Amino acid sequence: MKLASYAVGDTASYGIVTETGVIDLGSKLGAEAPTLRALIANGLDSASALAASASDDYSMDEISLLPVIPDPGAVWCCGLNTHSHFEETKHIFGHKDLPPVPMFFLRSRHTLVGSGEAIEKPALETDFDYEGEIAIIIGQRCRNIAKEDALGAIAGYTCFNDGSARQYQIRSHQVTTGKNAWHSGGFGPWMVTTDEVAMADLVLQTRVNGDVRQNMDIDDLVFSFADLISHISEVTWLEPGDVIVTGSPEGAGALRKPQVFLKDGDVVEIEVSGIGTLTNPIVEQKL
Image (cartoon, one colour):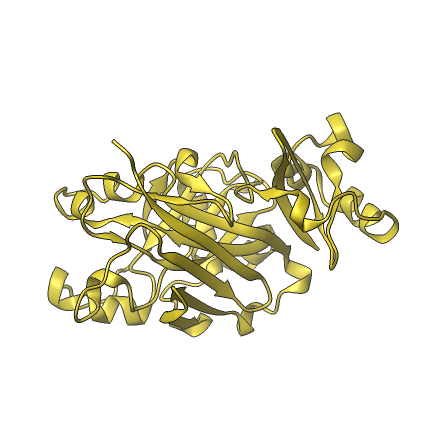
């Protein structure tokens, strides 16, 4: 299934994306599962039953997509988690060996926007950048989960744009400020459940104004999806609806020659095979 969070006018809901529209689960399941995060926590059986029997409630033109999970408990982002990105940054960071464990930072849910929504470039940021990534959505509560069991904790996959305010990022010893600009993280368009995704065949492409900037297949990852889930679960509980953003390949604007950064009016598309395309225009913050 494809599951999306969306708004109809001022009313937020979620549902099943079909070939012609969406089946609204928010109204059908009500208090049983008022949000997509709650549905995932309760299990997807009720949604599967409706997918087989219900008809569309809205066309895609009648809804505005929201972040797939508007209210995640945590958004874990893994840095330097592709071989290609690790290699292209060696001359900047001076590292020689791959990290022994994944390196994470956290994103606030207030940074998230859905597909079609604008990503906001901070007014004082000169070097605003994109990073296309595949995101995992956790499907079950887990702690100290073994690597061999970790893929079973995934509810589905989606696309993510780790929009980065580079000047805020590099001026600090920590990346947190540069990775938490308001409305800087594109998240969508929807979640595709694991039964419909051939994980080994996932391919990511990032485009800016139609120009291809990044390409990645799953073999580029340093730490696998299972590695990431198992590692986080060693130190804390992972909860249904939590998000793990798994790593961006070479080709971000800051590392191109010449450098090329995002500006007002640009459009960033992040496409992952078998999932869909996340599309976000860029707008300049108005002071």
